[in-house]
Image 1 (tube, one colour):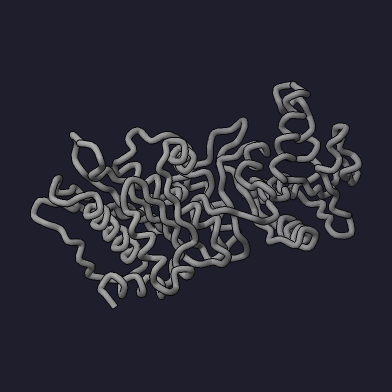
Image 2 (cartoon, rainbow, N blue to C red; image 1 turned 45 degrees about the vertical axis):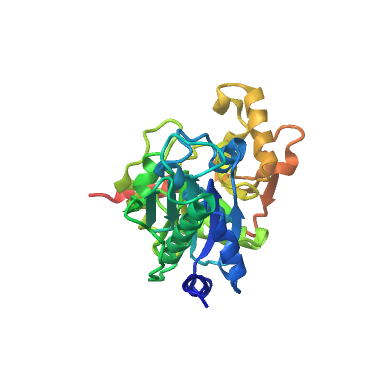
Amino acid sequence: MSELQETIQQIHDSTPLAVLAVAGAGNQSISWLLGVAGASRTLLEVLVPYGRLSMVGFLGSEPDQYVSGDTAREMARAAYRRALDLREEANSVVGIACTATIATDRQKRGEHRAYVAAWDQAGCTEYGLLLNKGLRDRAGEDELVSRLVIMALAAASGIEAELDLGLTDGDHLEVQHAGHPDPIELLLAGGAGMVTVHSDGSMAADEPVSAAILPGSFRPFHQGHQRLAEAAKIITARQAVYELSVVNVDKPPLEAAEVRDRLTQFGRKATVVLTRAETFRKKADLFPGCPFVIGWDTAVRLVAPRYYGGSSSNMLTALAEIWAAGCRFLVAGREDDGVFKTLADVPVPEGFKPLFQEIPEPQFREDISSTALRAWSQDRLP
């Protein structure tokens, strides 16, 4: 077995699952990985976004420059997110990407270069390779870049492999690693759409969530929230998670210290997802196919045109888009001025009744509210 094959076998025997995306070069790495037994233990998917529209679709926008370190990092990040979507268990994942411009069937004025990036939960490692132009033909340059892809995947898999790339004095390789910023700071800065805070304290940015979602401000988090989560879990047969938006419609965004303070209430009791989604329309984009668990008072606001700039049309459009995202609402009853109000007391627009489902009173009723608890706490202050 060659040195290359031994390295690939070690990769297949390691823990991380990978999505690999290559454009411009690095193509041989695909056949090498698939040619050693055990590839299904490593590769979740292989992508070759060669065309412009393919790359734009993969990244979500057009890069400023197709062959650059920035584009390699964005490709690796997109591959990492794709890996999170595709994994079936809680395995660690990595996104590996390569973008390159190498020898072709026409004369090139610029440099022959490649950028490879590996993105995982901890950070991103970037490999910038400047090739000795004219020394190798296209096949030779692709082999060198492909070896670099394998080396990057090995390193991301925790393998200390001394893989010979075949570099010459005219080639230049630069490697740099950057850890990800604090996920909460990243979210507050707009660099992530959501952050999942697991019950063990670990955090992951933009990790896909499939669960019953309980939105709230959690000021404070109390037994009513816990009992509602338990009821939702029984009704939906899904895990129930809490969602806290750091952005509010009519208030300044929460500061990092306040976010961390609210998270301490949950301890190791639950999973909390932090988002920047202040409306249910935006929440539906983040959690397609997920049910939202809300109280009667929230349901009333959800169907009130005044919360949509006074426009009934905007309200109906928002509800339709939420429905199209595969979401629905589970509505828990609430006491209001001594009367227990339920979904029957919500003026759901005609045609939208299937979007709402009542949580029966015997399954959940909690008359104490966060507002009442805050008032009680203030009254007890010296």
